[in-house]
Image (tube, rainbow, N blue to C red; front, side):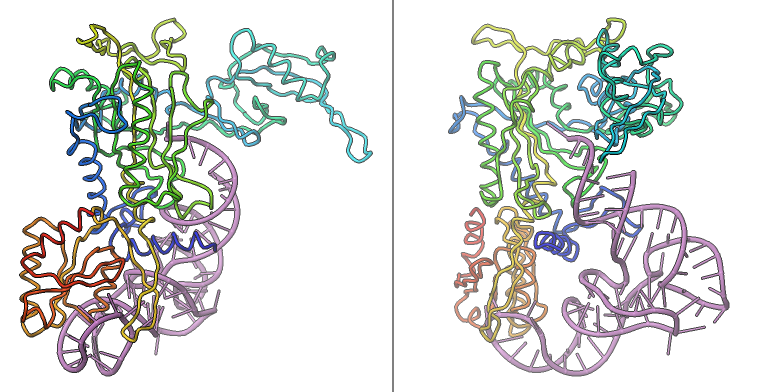
Length: 553
RNA sequence: GCGGGUGUAGCUCAGUGGUAGAGCGCCACGUUGCCAACGUGGCUGUCGAGGGUUCGAAUCCCUUCACCCGCUCCA
C-alpha cells in the first residue's frame, strides 16, 4: 500500500473514531454513496457553509467595487425546493441526457444512445491476414453493421464500416451482400450479431441499460407514471427559474448574484473515494447575472475570487490548482470554464479532484427556460415533427437596463462549489502528523488537525489542571462564559493534562485554556496554541476577547 | 459494470472446524500535576447479513451487502 493510500485510510479512520463522518445506515450494513456527518463533522461542515455564505453574501458590500471586479454588485440568497416542475429538467437538458437507454461498446469504450444506432444486415467473406507466415483465413459471415450517422451519410458510413469489418478494399464493395433495409438497432433481438459503430468485431455491445442520473420520485399519494418527478441533480436551476421573481421583488439591478446552498442528488455510477463522489451531496452555488459585454471580465473575477477563498481558509497553494478548460472542452457559447481542484490524498501523485467549477454559461440557461431545450449551437432543439422537443416556459426572462436603455438576456457566470468536497479537502489539508515532546522531553509523533480557526469544530477547550482546589469550578465558569458568547467550546477534566491536549489536537481545537494553581492567586489562565504549542498567561477578564480576536485569524 | 482484496470489541488487528482474544481507547478509584501510552478494577462482541454442510462454523460452501484497490464510467 502506498503512502498516499495510507494517509487517506488514517483520515477515514480518524473521521469515524472521532465522529466526523460515518457511513450512512451503518448498522444495516451501509448504503453505497451516502454518508452521515457526526457531531464534529456537522460543526465542521456548518462552518464551511457559514464561511461561504458570510464571505459571498452576508458580509458582501454592494456599495463598493471590490478589488478586481468590474463594478460594485449585489448578492442575494434563495432557497428553492428540491423537487421542481419536471419540465425544468427537460429544458435544462438533464432529462434527455440521462433517462435514455444506452449501450456500451466494450471494445471502443464508447457509449451510444440505443435509439440512435441504426444498421443493416450484410453478408460477405471475412478475410483475416495471416500471421507469422501462416495463411490468412476466409469465412462467410452475416452481421449487422451499425452506425450513428444520420440522414444521407448513413448508407455511405455503413459501406465503409462493412468494408473495414470484412477486411475488403473499397473496389470490392460489390462483394458485400446487403439484406433487408436500414433499421434501428432496437429492432434486433440479439446484439451479439451486431458490429458496434466503432468496433472491429461482433458482439462488443452490452445490453441496453437505462441511465437514470436523476433520482425519480412520484408526486401525490396516488401518483402513477404520469406523475414522475425528480430530485434535483443541481441547485442551479432553482436560481434560473427564480431569476424573474428575484428581479421583480428585490430591487436588485444587474450585475448581481443569486446564491443557494442545498442538497442535490445524482445516481453516480461509481460512488468512490469517501465522500468525494456521493449520491446525495450539498452544493454552494452562485448564479451571477451580468451584461453580455462584461461577462468575460466577470468570469475572470469570479474565477480568481473563488480560488482565493480556499487559500484564505488554509488550503496550501501547492495542493490547490486552477485549471482552465481547453477550448475543445468548452461549449460553443462559453468564454471559459475553470475547475478549482485539490490534490486529495486518495488520488495518484499529480492528480487533482474537482472542488468547484466556475463556468461562463452565456445566456444558455435563461434562454432555455424561455424558449425550450437548446442544442449545442444555441438553437431550439426540434423533434421529428419539427416541434420544440421540450417547450420552455414562454415567459420573458430578459432584463431591461434602464441606464443603457437596452433589453437583453443576461449572461451567467456560475461558481458551483461542492460543500462536502470542500469539507473533505479542508479535512485532508488539516491532517498532520508532527512531533511534540512528552513529559520527559522526548519527541513523539502527534496527530493534529490544523484547521483554520474559522473552520475548527471546537474553538477552544477549557481544562482544570487538576480535579480539586477549586480549579473545576473556575474552569466551568469560563466554559459557561464562552458558551454564552456563542462559541462552541469543550470542558474536559478527564485524565492527564497532556492527554487532554492531544485529544483536542486530534480534532483540531485551536486553543486550550488551563486553569492551574496560579489562577487562584492572580486570576490568569494559560492559553496554549495548537500549532506552536506555545503558552501565554491571560487574565480571565480578558480571555473571551483574546480568544475572539485570535479566532478571526 | 468487470477483476482483485477486506469485513472479528469504540479503534487497530490476532484467531483456518472444538468454551471469542490482545493492544489501544473508554469508565471508576488511586497516584502524578502543563504536553498521550503509572497502578488497580470495570464495560464493550447478532465474528458484515442470510442460507447451507457438520455432533459442532469466526473458520468450509452458496448468496448478499458494504468498504478499499485497479480497469471502466462519470461533472
